[in-house]
Length: 113
Ligand code: DGP
Image (cartoon, rainbow, N blue to C red; front, side, top):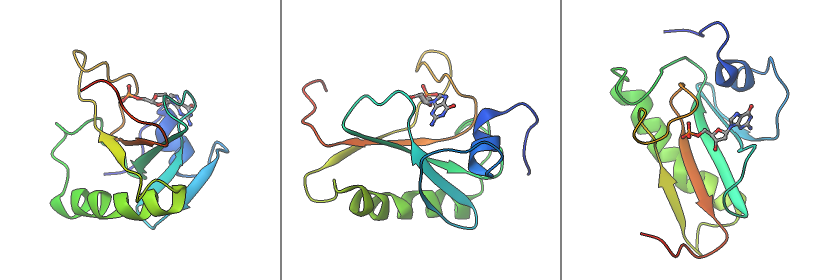
């Protein structure tokens, strides 16, 4: 699996478009969401292109994405106060960018579900 042409998250995650990068590993990029819904709102994005969770993602990569969540929470200051992780998949979930990503949101109390 590699990058997909004309995918904005492929370009951001691989440094072709500058962004507010929070942290990076060999396979993952973490950057700030351009339309933050909470004081802290960052995205964990694989550097390889997968369009969604439905895209037969290697277990190892999924594990690395999950393991990175608390590290990102520490780095962004929401580890102890709490945070929400969201993966939107497909149209009914309003997935707007068709490149797999995990939202990490925090810094204010959630009042919905
Ligand atoms: P989703 O609805 O789960 O596909 O969320 C996509 C998120 O990506 C949305 O919260 C806004 C954010 N986003 C869209 N385009 C850009 C961009 O060009 N840069 C950054 N940093 N975030 C973006």
